[in-house]
Structure formats: C-alpha cells, structure tokens
Image (cartoon, rainbow, N blue to C red; front, side, top):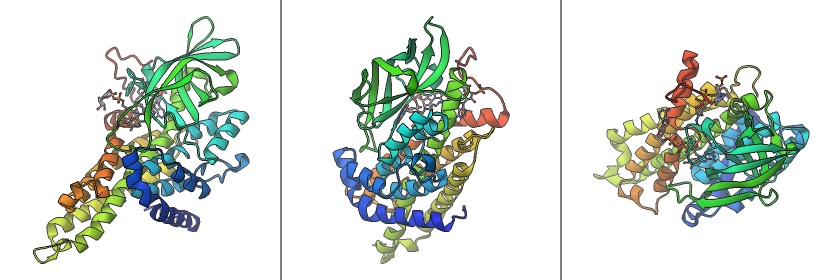
Length: 397
Ligand code: FAD
Ligand code: COA
C-alpha cells in the first residue's frame, strides 16, 4: 500500500472520526428521505474537506488528489452519498476550472467548493451516453456571448449544485462548428438554466440525478472554460480533467466495499450457528480472505492512479491508470459488498441493515463516469496505441 505521510495519516484519522461520529448515524435517513444532506455538506466544509485541492493562491489548502482520496474513502465507508459529495467538491469540474480557467474563473470555482458547493458536471445526453462526443447541446456565438440550447440528463446534483460545467458543441457566428467547449453557469444566476425530471434511482438516493435543460441560456465569453488547445481539442482536454473524477468515483466504490467488509468482519465473530461463531467456518474465512485481497489491490491501484500524472505535464491522473483503477475497483467492490451481505444471511437482506443500502449504492460504479465496457476500450486504445472509434463508419466527431 502507498506509504502515507504523517500529515496524510492525520487527515485520514480526522476523516474517520467525522465519518463515524457525524456522517454514519445519518446515512440511513439520507437514503430513506432521498434528501440532499446539507448538514453533512456543512460538516465536510467545516472540517476542510471541500476544496481540498484548491491551490493556496486561491485560498485553499493546496492538497493532493491522494489526500482527497483518503477522505472520500472514509466518508464512503459509512455513506456513499457523502463520499460522492466529497468527490465533486475536490475533483472533476473544479480540477478543470483550476487548470484551464482565467483568474476570474479559478477564483469563482474555488469560492464555490470552499463554501461546500458540489459543482455539477454536465456531459451525458439522452442520445449521447457512452458516445459522449456525439453530444448535440450547442453553443452559438452571438457577439460577446454564447447562446446554449440542449438537454443533459443523469446530472448528479441537478437542482442542488450551484456551479455547473457544461460540455457543448460550439458554433461560430457563421454557423461553422468549432469543436467542444466547457461553459460555466450558476444556478439562479444564469437565465435559461433550468431543471427537468429527477430519476428515481436504485441507490445513492440522497443526491438528485436530474435533467438539466438549457433554453437560450446566455453565457458571456468570460464564462467559457477554454482548454489550452481551444475548442478544436476541447473535448479531449476536458475529458483529461475528468480523469480525476474517475479516480474519485472508484474511491467511493472502494469505501463502500471496505465499509461492508468491516461490518462483515465484526458480524462473523458475533453470530453463532452450530454452537460456534460463524467465523470458525472455513467457507466464510476464505471469502473474507478473498475480500481483503480485492480491497488491498483496489486501494493500491486507486492510490497509484491518484498520484499518477498523464503525459505532457498533465496536472491530472493518467487516463489509462484512472480507467484501470475505476474498472477494477468498481467490479471488485460490487463483489465484496455482495459477499459481505451474504455473510449476514437474512439479516443482510433486511432494510434494517446498512448492507442492502451499500450494495444498492455500489452497483452504480460500473455505470456512471464511463461504463466498465467503455473504460476497457479506453484502456485497450492506449495500451495498443490505436484509435478505436466505435462508430460503424470509424468516424470520431
Ligand atoms: P449507454 O451508452 O446507452 O450504454 C448502454 C450499454 O451499452 C452499457 O452497458 C454500455 O457499457 C454498453 N456500450 C455502449 N457503447 C459500447 C461500446 N462501444 N462497446 C461496448 N459496450 C458499449 N453524466 C454526466 O454527464 N454527469 C453526471 O453527473 C452523471 N452522473 C451520473 C450518476 C449516476 C448515478 C449514473 C447512473 C449516471 C450518471 N451520469 C452522469 C451518466 C453516465 O455517465 C452514463 O450513464 C454513462 O456514460 C453511460 O451512458 P448511458 O447510460 O447512456 O449508457
Ligand atoms: N483522458 C484524456 N483524453 C481523453 C479521454 C480521457 N479520459 N477520453 C478521450 N480522450 C481523448 C482521446 O485520447 C482522443 O484524443 P486523440 O484525438 O488525441 O486520440 C479524443 O479525446 C477523442 O477521444 P476518442 O476516444 O477518439 O473519442 P470517441 O468519439 O470515440 O469517444 C469517448 C469515446 C471518449 C466518449 C468514450 O471513450 C467515453 O469516455 N465515454 C464515456 C463518457 C463519460 O465518461 N461520461 C461520464 C459523464 S459523468
């Protein structure tokens, strides 16, 4: 496992205490009420666990992705929803804004996350999920502004997030396509930014997954997040920033599985059948051993991805390692959480027990943030050094 510094061990310990004492007792209620846990957001913010990766010149602590990963795992061990909030307050949209933004944009984004806002990242559309580069949300240049029209769906935090990073296809005044750009918009401040249906989800119910709709939404040029190579390679650069969020998402899966495993470890020592603790049965001992192997391997890979950097002085995790870590961690985490539930027998299947919630929560991570299938194509493309366009005509937009 990664050798953590004294400072990192201290953050991890503080996160563990906050998770156990404050977040865990509320987790079932967050799931049942399906309400965004604003109290948990305040607790995270007061502990300095939002905006951790904001550089010092912007008023943040300038911590690393690995520092954030340590906090995310501890939160997710007890509450997947709070783990996810901790991801997006520290990675993803905020990483893109800090790396690519103007001084004004960096300051704006930093203030939001330092104050506990979980920015929304708006990529997926009804007809462009895995095929994200086929998005049709469009931004038309009109003088000093862009007029954005389109619809995103499955947007985490839709309706509660204030800051939005919206991916849109850009057209100049003559109607010629320029590529894909990022547009910053703020709920209640950007006219034309509205919200549609909320999905009733299987798990992670305390965060809304909602349609986000743009109806002649006007964005000034000062809110265009223009990556270094401009719109032409805007999609690639924005997805590069997104690698940080993939590492974060994998960490939530890791945390949920680790939390389920710890509960199973306690339970097998207490529960007796055939006149002895069920921990004495080799059938369960070997399951626990396998679970521990999967968790250690997933944690090591996640930490390696968090501390890696992509090519060409990228400030973000390496794309291949981020994808490898998310595939492996999400798939192993589902297995570990399911095996933990198995050890509880019928009690595991009861809604009185957190295991069923954790299994519903963890099921998401082979889907959101790039499916396990798509991420395999990302990995294959990079290890083979081959373009692998998935469209029939072999064309990449
Ligand atoms: P599809 O692309 O329709 O895929 C359907 C199936 O086909 C999948 O199994 C997929 O793996 C497979 N498939 C598709 N293409 C290929 C291929 N070429 N090779 C092999 N298999 C393939 N999006 C955002 O933009 N912002 C968010 O905040 C956000 N949050 C989310 C939160 C949750 C809880 C969930 C579930 C999703 C979220 N998403 C978000 C959307 C998510 O990124 C998409 O669901 C994902 O990219 C897959 O798209 P899709 O659902 O349209 O599935
Ligand atoms: N990191 C760095 N660069 C990336 C990247 C990533 N995660 N994903 C794509 N790129 C780059 C590619 O390397 C390519 O650059 P190149 O022209 O130098 O080779 C460029 O972006 C286009 O990618 P490509 O794979 O050719 O695009 P495609 O049109 O075939 O689309 C994706 C495939 C990228 C959309 C698909 O792999 C994907 O990631 N889908 C999931 C979307 C997702 O994660 N949504 C989550 C929403 S929360």
